[in-house]
Length: 249
Ligand code: PXP
Image 1 (cartoon, rainbow, N blue to C red):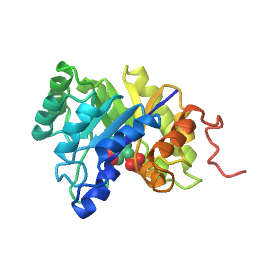
Image 2: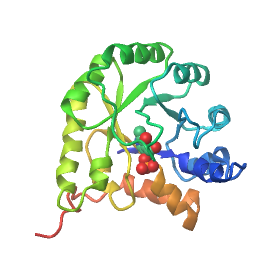
Image 3: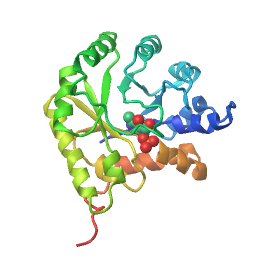
């Protein structure tokens, strides 16, 4: 059964829209945990557009589940990760002009530098996950880098229309199988919603789903604790027709 990592970046987005102190993602993480979050994820971006250094520092002290720090593979972020010591680092690509993380990392071709960073963090006891598209070549490169985990990018599945969705779902299923055969542990995320999460949660071997925007959006109506509770219920008991998104034929 997959567990739920709640990404709270969008709470910080609301705060930063006014450059004020509220809402504070630190106490909100506690509410997410009370709703059943198995982990809290934050992305400390180079431009600090949402999560701030102070958030990560405080969350390290307050999060009682697991703290997953998403970050770019840079020297600055390596220093921060080694100081903060999150329970996991997820390396993601970062471009200043993007609205959110757009694609998976291209591991093929940048293996030696990335391998050094992965080894450094893992030698210090911080497991590293690489955010990649569900692509066999990328997954092999993840293993070459020595990472213990991958996070499969579910964005293409989330954005696909009904016609394409089963094909994208099959790619994630196959990616999960390949990764596990390579000895990698598997998470997934990006663009998952209350409507599309169940087929991904039902994939055998999927360990954790990282979900942010849809939960924070729903929390406006029902509160964060309840929004997390509802998502956790879907993940723990997904409907068993993994292609239910397909139109009746
Ligand atoms: N996983 C990764 C690697 C991400 O970059 C993001 C977005 O910050 C998510 C998961 C969560 O995506 P969403 O907010 O669309 O649920």
